[in-house]
Image 1 (cartoon, rainbow, N blue to C red):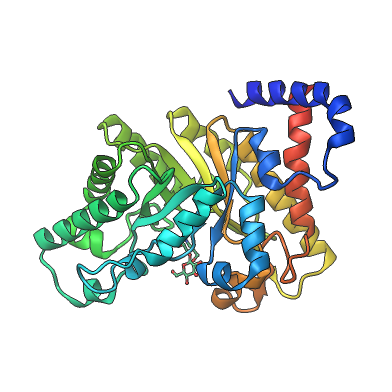
Image 2 (spheres, rainbow, N blue to C red):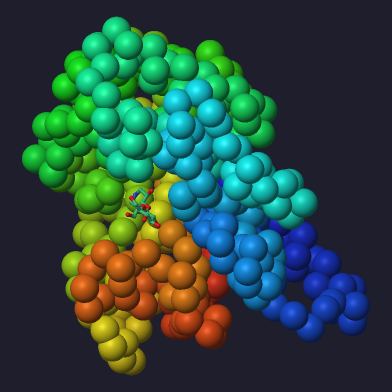
Length: 350
Ligand code: 9MR
């Protein structure tokens, strides 16, 4: 379907070019316009403080991207800081922004072990109580946004690197069945949302992605409503994935959608020409892997400017992981992403 559309759109563009050219605007197509040719949504995580305070950030978020993800404001600690008292304000603001800009929203995140509210960590709930709390959280949250979320990250980062299940409050108290439960509850709360399992370090075929593969295969076999696998893609310039395409394709063959959900490519600071070139190559290659995978439906970067990246705060001495620098100047990676989107439609049309 994607290839077919690209051919049709490519042909139309070729046909229309001589007529349209005199009237065409001088500005080059945005990332979202280029991605639309492939039936792909291109997205960014959104930092709500920056969206409120920085007009340039706001403008670029709206113009360049066709899907957005809340970087933090749909996490449990933000939504329900006191038990039973929800604060939807920041998340709703993002929903309004997305609607105004014709953007699909990725909901992030329902079940995770980080950024849980203090009241949840502080009390020693029984298994039955905790199961009810999780169920209620999923019904409240998915229900609040019902009909307006394109993809939900239902369960996030449930595995260790060796493929065993991560020791979290959910696994400890509820056992491994919490994963299937979460998907079933989310589906009941919004039958139209696409439901994703999401994780990092699963770009390559490795012990962790093998475990995710086994999990989603077994969920499908049991009739659990799961639609896709999100591959975060928090990467570095010097250790890019080598089997990403093969990995995406095996999920595709299971009948699942895939999505790149949190791409960034960090480097040891300061940046230099060689590192920026290497970074561009990694962005280009993983985008190419997504485009080559039939049901890889979105490519989301975890922030688009180095100005607000989470990376320097977490990895000492590293950063410069995004497409634009701190002054919103395009880096080679931005040009590489544009070129990959532009070149591929031409190749398909040929
Ligand atoms: O980018 C997020 C950062 O602002 C938060 O402080 C951090 C806290 O856990 O979470 C970051 O986002 C994470 C995402 O929700 C899940 N995958 C890993 C991301 C980077 O840590």
